[in-house]
Every structure is written in structure tokens, then in C-alpha cells.
Amino acid sequence: MEKTVKMNGGDYSVVEEESKAGFGGGVEDVYGEDSATEDQLVTPWTVSVASGYTLLRDPHHNKGLGFNEKERDAHYLRGLLPPAVFTQELQEKKLMHNLRKYDVPLHRYMAMMDLQERNERLFYKLLIDNVEELLPVVYTPTVGEACQKYGSIFSRPQGLYISLKEKGKILEVLKNWPEKSIQVIVVTDGERILGLGDLGCQGMGIPVGKLSLYTALGGIRPSACLPVTIDVGTNNEQLLKDEFYIGLRHKRATGQEYAELLDEFMNAVKQNYGEKVLVQFEDFANHNAFELLSRYRSTHLVFNDDIQGTASVVLAGLIAALKLVGGTLADHTFLFLGAGEAGTGIAELIALEISKQTKAPLEETRKKIWLVDSRGLIVSSRKESLQHFKKPWAHEHEPVKALLDAVKAIKPTVLIGSSGVGKTFTKEVVEAMSSFNKKPLILALSNPTSQSECTAEEAYTWSKGRAIFASGSPFDPVEYDGKVFVPGQANNAYIFPGFGLGLIISGAIRVHDDMLLAASEALAVQVAQENFDKGLIYPPFTNIRKISAHIAAKVAAKAYELGLASRLPRPKDLVKYAESCMYSPIYRSYR
Image (cartoon, rainbow, N blue to C red):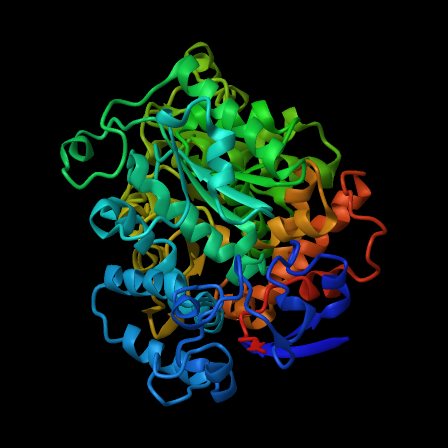
């Protein structure tokens, strides 16, 4: 049996047959909710039948004023609620009205987190239906400020905190989490939160925010998501002196002590949740990010959003932008400011895609890509002193110190900023790009907004309206010379929710680079002509669940093709199957 529900301008099916196989929204349906549509009765189970006061304090099942008269009688709610009965739509309208009254973005964030802890389905309905307005609230840029002040605004734990105190007991700690059927874990150690640096234990805002997007944008069931923060200390002196800091008060552990804790965590995760649990590394410092991905990619289902997710979303934008600038990827020259995990990750994926298209060896295609770090252009004469992940990008050239000089020497068609340092794409740099490119492609990717290499207004003004611009954080449309330009946002939220869903619906056991290329290509084809006409190289977020379903289908297809999928037989229509597996936040009726 199938029921179609309307959300955010799209139709989504809730399919009963899948849930009978123990599979709904990508995970076993522990609450029995998807054995019915929202019109058919279910019992709100927790450990026992939830009722009365307990039911109103259970975010999985609480509907607030959404409980109808029959439910109020059946579940001992009489008198515990005011007499009015509100539809979910009316509750949503009221909450959006209240949220828009807040002038301070952090207050909106706190109100959203409060709603998530009170009424989970309403939180996701709100986020899905108002995604363009609320994405900057629950994710970048507001989540950065939330992490900085997490100790002060912390009210209720939303994930698992695993510190050095838990060494030797991590498996027990995982068993303390109430949900048992986990399929996606987002984990950070808080050392490099966005462009804000070491925020230690307060980095928890990132896994919590990412997983809310996994559910809202990718349809992964909330009960299947686990946010984790690994606390090994912090080198942030300000936090160590802050009386409200919630983490360990000592310098970061490194070396063997750090490696052993992470190893115990990764083994415990696999032991407790099985081979197919996806572990997404988030906001680790460069040295650990590359090391962890390299160490576990052959033994676990792991994905680093900063290295691979960013790369995939940027590559999608570049493929789409070819419709505006012409040529193939191989015809372009790329210059990066920033040679950390984001910069080198994007560079490698571009080189892989060019290699796939031209059949040229990877060593050759890398030569189209140049990187500038804090010491200048990465060239072969610096090879001995470079970190291992920078070495493939050391090409033959005279040393060049400043970005402006590098732009003039290399004459790139594409300039990409992943430095985490604001205001580095100066007027002179943008003017130089415009002097030898009819349509310079400028991507200022660093987050949050304060760290962006340049603003949308600067890019359009300095290039005299010729730049094609996208950024990591959102910018408002810009009017220049009588024309309105809409800046695109190269947001990882385009990729990782659909990518994760694709891994889950195929039962993938490992992540392969070809899956990332498939995700990029799937996103690029979603950009319509009307988007290009406004200078956009990404589709609007209003269609994100449809986009995620298409990305999931392409990723799943690649997993089956590579022999890495374990969910057999392969569904006939992967797009429809992906949509049918997506979590729906519509209220259920309780018997």
C-alpha cells in the first residue's frame, strides 16, 4: 500500500511494503510508525506505552496541541493541554511567526533546538518546508556562533560525549545511547570547527546540525542518527579559563594516546552497529583528518565531509558552470588559495573527473591545478618541506609568494578559496582575474561569513558584473549596473544527505571515489536554465529532497556497479525507492 504526502512543493510516497521488511527511511522502524500512513492508527511505544505527562515529554511522539479529542482521552491527556486542537500546519505557521520576530540569529537557533527536544516531527516539518530560510539557522553560519557559546547555551545533551575518561569503556558508552539501530554517525573532535579553530567539546553543535540535515534533506530517520564528540582536551586558552566550558580542562592529547582512543571508538562502532554504519568525520584538523580517512577507508564505511563532501559539491558547481563559461573541465586552469583538507580534497576530485573524461593519467590532470598556501605557490622546489597531502600539487614553476602574483603568473580561469581567512580575494585579485577571463569563476568557500575570501557584492562589483560567484556561506542577491545577481552557495548540504541515503539504501560497505563523482554529476544536472539565467551554478534548496533522492539513486547505482552494495536484489527504480525510504515528519494518529 502506498500513500502520497505533500511537503515543500513535492510529493513523497510512504510505502508500507518496505517497512514490513524492517526498512523504512533507511533503517529498521523501531517505533512501528511506518507500518501505517499518518491516517492509520499506531501506538506510541517507548519502553512501555507512553501516556499522559510522559507522552508530552517524549519528543518522538509529542504533538502538543496536535493531539485530537480521541487521543486526549485514550492517552490520559485531558487537562494537561489547553482545549484547542491545532493542525500541524497551524502549529508550523505559529512557530514561523515567532521565529521571524527574533532579531538575533543565535536566538532563532536556540528556539529551533528547543523545538527539536520538545516535538521532533514538528521540528523537521518546519525545517523541510522552510529550508532556505532555516538552513542558515541550524547550520552555517549560525551554528558557528552556537559552538563558540555552546557552554552557555547547553541545556540537554543531544549526542554522545566520549572523552579520555571513557578510554577502555567506549563500547559500554555506545550502549548507553537509547537508540539501537544506528545507521549514520557524525563525529568531531572539535579541533577545527568551520573557520573558527579549536572549540573542543563545544564542537558538538556541528554533528547535531549535520544530522538534523541528514533527516530533513536526506530523509534518514532521526532515530538512526547519532551525533558524537570525541573530547581529548583543547588548546583554546579562552575555553580552558571559561567557568562554563563543558569539556576536559587540559591541552589536547596527541600521538599514541589520541590514536588509541580513536581506534577503540571505530572498533566499538563496528562491533555495536555492524559493518554498514556510516561514520562521517567532521571538522578534524588537517593532520588527523587525512590520517583517519586513510586509516579506516579500507575497513569501515567512512566519509570525511570536509575533504570529500566539499570536493563533491564544488565539482558539481564547476560541471554546471561549464554551461556558462564553455569548454570542458580539462580546458580550464584552477588556482586554489588554501591547501588544507578542503583545498586538496577538491583539487583531487577535479583531477579524478578530468582523468575520467579524458582518459589521461592522474599525474597529468593534476598539472592543471595549482595551490597557494601560507608560504605562497606550491612548487617543486618546496617539495621536501611539504606535508604529504600537498606533495602531488608541487609543479615546476618559479617560487611566488603573494596570491596576486600567483594569479598573474598562472592566469587561472577558476579561483577557489578554501583558506579559512577572510578578505583575501582583494579588489586587485578580482580585477586581475577579470583582465584575462570574460567570465571569471570565483568560489569563496570559507565559512562562516566573516571568513569568506570576498563577499558577493565585491566579486560582482570588482569584476563589473562578469564574475560567476558562489560561496560557502549565504549572501543576499546583489544589484549591479541595473541587473540583479543571485550568488550560489556551494553548500555541502547539497551532497552529504543524499550521498548518505544512497549508501544506506544500497547497503554499501565501503565508500569509493567514483561514488563522489556520481554524486557531483547528479547534482550538476539538477541546475535548470532559469537558474543559469540568474548566474546560479546550483539548484534552489527548495527542491532539496528531490535532489537528494536523485543523488542517492546515482550513488546507490555506483555501489551496485562496483560490487559494494549488500542490499539485494537491486530495486528496479532507484529514485522511487530512495523517495519511498525517506522519513516523513507528518504526524501519525495514535490509537
